Length: 280
Image (cartoon, rainbow, N blue to C red; front, side):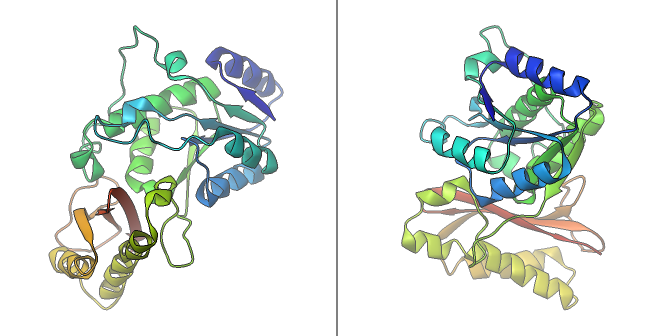
């Protein structure tokens, strides 16, 4: 496994492999790898001859009051995990190499970036789209692997790939969960035991919504109200609960086809997101 910091160097190395017609799978991460990340890496190893993982805490997607400086960066541990899973290249650029002083170009997916989490984290998805566009241009993969837990992010990246004609297939893999249902996240380590127990309410609320829908409920507002009632029993603050169209992320008044149920909840100082997809 090679660890490379320079964008030019990784492009040169991957160029050699592409000339050998090797298929390349790419897993973009911000490090602090957990089983969710590793499941993406394993899928990439299974489906490709070469696997590239990026580890880059992207400053563009953090707001002024968010945890950029405190975000966990256990690089040596992450590299050991990548090596164990059979990764070929790990790309670990410095912010200055991706965003030099005169950098002034950004990617924004209009209509999707200001929905759901975008309302509470202005500029976040512009930062996500910009860095993923740069990474795709650098790595030139055949497939990129994303997690369903970050559903809005995956939908935005898929739209960007389609709109800008990137030659890459977007693979969105299922959310990995703890035994109690909590979605795996690098931010889970910030919670104490009491908060960690309360955090399972996100998964329980999603399951309640699925049960209501399976029993015939179609009114989104009533379903959301029941979810709010459940979450209100815990020491939690709701940013949003939404039932939206799976492609446009527009709110749905009545459920009649495929939809995404998504929520963001603050437990203590930790903001957690989760979602589920309902298919007609």
